[in-house]
Length: 203
Image (cartoon, rainbow, N blue to C red; front, side):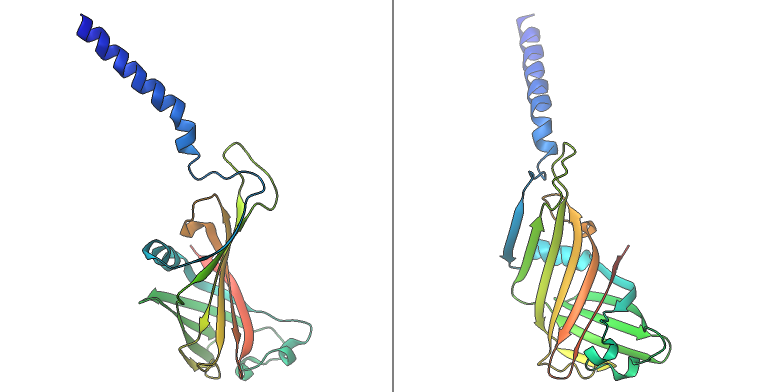
């Protein structure tokens, strides 16, 4: 009888501990209002896997200012005064390198090889202060900058002196997941190539 009562007491104690700790477990990824982070991160196996899971693909847009193509260098094939060029992107991430295949209609295409650098920048911030009881939803941005290793087709002017900046944007909690990042932007800046295009991450 004593052993049975002891067992019941132990089980009750375990249940009480689990109940009392469940909010803490549920909020392992929660962050408080006013959270801000700007840091440099080495792309370890976790982040390489995460970045590889963000799918670049689908429709994309060429970034244009009021200057039109006068503000763009290195994309002569796409100049058309009557309409903005529509782009279609497919990409893979393997051996720490993004390989982007970009098409504009049936006439023009090009490929870019973007190797992952030794470091990238993480930016996470509470920008609206709304906490529904499970922490705030953070604005997130991963920024990756390096040099283009190879370019073909309409991107052939982007030589190895061309710098690229690839930014993934989204929202989420304090833990990072590929599903947090829903948009991307790629900018090229070099002696013969200056332009940017952007789109949504493929589902």
